[in-house]
Amino acid sequence: MPATSKATRESHARVFDLDVQSLRELNQALHKLTPGSNETAWEVLNPKGNHSVAVGVDQPVSIDVRGSVGYYCGGMNSGGAITVHGSAGPGVGENMMSGSIVVKGDASQYAGATGKGGLLVIEGNASSRCGISMKGIDIVVHGNIGHMSAFMAQSGNLVVLGDAGDALGDSIYEARLFVRGKVDSLGADCIAKEMRPEHLELLQGLLDRAGVTGVKPSEFKRYGSARTLYNFNIDNADAY
Amino acid sequence: MCGIVGLFLKDKALEPKLGAMLSEMLVSLSDRGPDSAGIAIYGAPSGNEAKITIQSPKPERDFRGLDAELAKAVGAPVSISVKSTHAVLRITPDKVDEAREALQSLRPDIRIMGAGEAVEIYKEVGLPEAVVDRFDVRKMTGTHGIGHTRMATESAVTTMGAHPFSTGADQCLVHNGSLSNHNNVRRELVREGMKFETENDTEVAAAYLSNRMAHGKNLGEALEGTLSDLDGFFTFVVGTKNGFGVVRDPIACKPAVMAETDQYVAFGSEYRALTKLPGIDNARVWEPEPATVYFWEH
Image 1 (tube, each protein chain N blue to C red):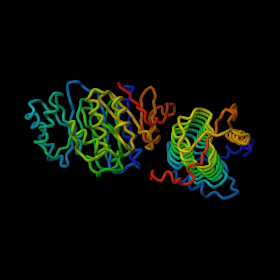
Image 2 (cartoon, rainbow over the protein chains, first blue to last red):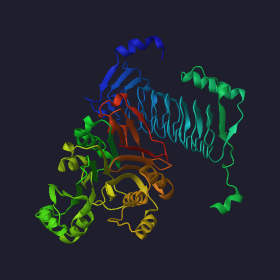
Image 3 (cartoon, helix red, strand yellow):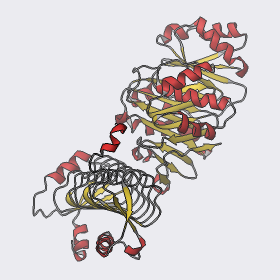
Image 4 (cartoon, helix red, strand yellow):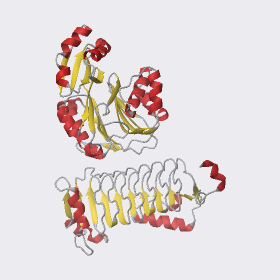
């Protein structure tokens, strides 16, 4: 969305106060939106840790959530631009298809789990299992991520400006992981990989989309799959 | 599921509101566990009085005249205050063990919820709202407390299967998760003389901590031991006479959020439980790290 229209949009934002209106009313109103609707700006007040805020959005609207949310905020998002002005509970952006979610604070477990597309930005830290089983989503975390992140990650990109916890990328498929800080340990079949020009370019694009400045792609290391778990190895038969 | 809460006050001005604050926190997590609920509140210990919280399936029959009969049996004054199915007996601290034994013969159906100089424990089957109303928890004052709302997995939905579990003087524990080696640990603890009331996994964790503290460990050291000796999923919140502790297993899939201000340290399974605490918008809010012990003492 062009930045110039921001003030206009905000002045016409449809406001939902969850102290007064129910979560179901909010989500039903969002689900009733049709292509081309003029109600493109939404504001949610007093989320107070509620679950499932703005789940299942399927139109390109912007939603500003003023406060912290509980489980599954923005789950299955398809085209919405959701900003959480607070922290998010477990499963923020779970199975996101497209659009964007920006969390100004921290995110709890399994942020962006199974996401197929779109961009998830965590401006604070994300906890364990960030990007678990990601299937094409791009995730940018300004802080650190917890243990078992990108477990069985299939595709997409996970960018971490801080550190990663234990067992990063365990049993990873073809997702790309970029970590600027230290990694406590790598999971099974996850290895450090060479940062080639195309990766630097890809990473610069991701940092730009996430609004990250003052950080160079060359400061990151790339991690990905060693591809040794792809096929059954007869020498491992005794292990089963 | 299950929902757990804890609140440790630093600011004495909040002590009259402890029951109300903790009740509000617990009720907000009702949909994490509708089976049963319980709360432990620590009042300021007077030093010359111990409290025994008891429960009866037939309170009218069991509590009538119990104070006089118990006083006669132990040879010391006893007072009783009844709250629904529970009652608190007050007695001099050196008579607690004698009173526990006497209760078994005087009122065989009575269950002891907990004992100590500070703690009172109330737990029953039902929603948190019903349980805090039934025991008038909102009016209770104190320095710290913990609470639990249960979705049973490991054992039956009964009063005795509800949390908190207390296995030592002024000690109690609430748990979100399930333990897989509790039978083995229970056997070891029984061999060391610990007594168990239920088949519940959480009672084993409580007894494990009581046992370690009886061997001279402090709360932090005892909690540290759970990481190597207990197998399974757990977020524990623990209360002692003057302390409050939290630990999560290394996998840490059971949720936990903490908040700290100059006035209190608070724990909730979810942020929802913390939203009505004073000054929460400016509190330090964080997710406790896996396999890391946190504890505070007065």
